[in-house]
Length: 276
Ligand SMILES: [Zn+2]
Image (cartoon, rainbow, N blue to C red; front, side, top):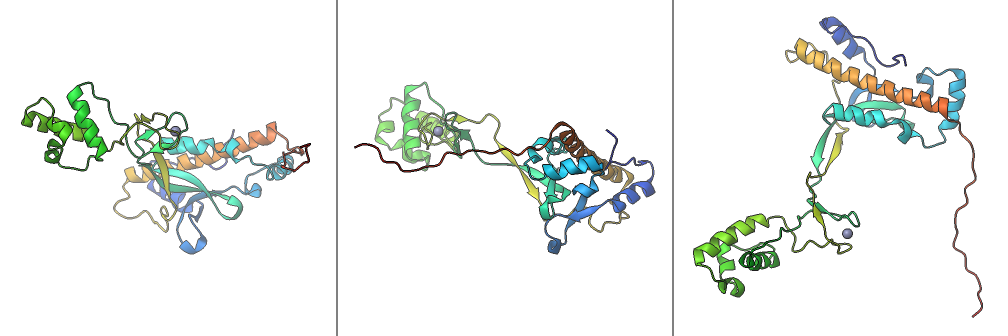
């Protein structure tokens, strides 16, 4: 597929790179009154370079929910940028693809329920083999790990353990740290089935729509070395390529699908008489 949004830039020429960046189309990152803007492309139908036959199909397509079919290049782009940048849609009726700053943030969940999918901000407590450790762990979990080690020493069940005082104190200190952020049991708060700890803590993409990118930038400051200019050109070219990939997906959709009208029947609740 020929490039539509992408341009070839001479990365040896400062003038060419600055001309590309300052001449690139920009659009608001939020509402126009927030006055922040970033690199963008218009994806309204009349801006996509469609043939008249494609345009007819495309207008029919607007009544369907096709965005999920063509948006995948956004995820690829975000991954390729280590989640520091992503692409969003802005404008009335979503007429613009806009480059946004973003970041991966931990959700803070430490465990999940494989049965119902519920996530939990505490960990499943480890199991202890040793009988003395089990007694200490039970006391610590029963008190939400809230006390100083010395206080646990005075609990009747721990006082009765056949160990020397300093041994107990060392055990209490170790088990307290092993049980940090753990809930009292492994049970899911919703369905009571056992939870599991995440091996990789889950994260989500946070987008910063209030941050414009290179708004009003003239690229003549000291921070714009040839290296940083090239990095910026690479970023914007990758954005352009992703927008092309989305447009290509849309063109393929126009080629491969047509819109038909179907009647859907849905169940309704009615009251009926039945013999008593
Ligand atoms: Zn559950």
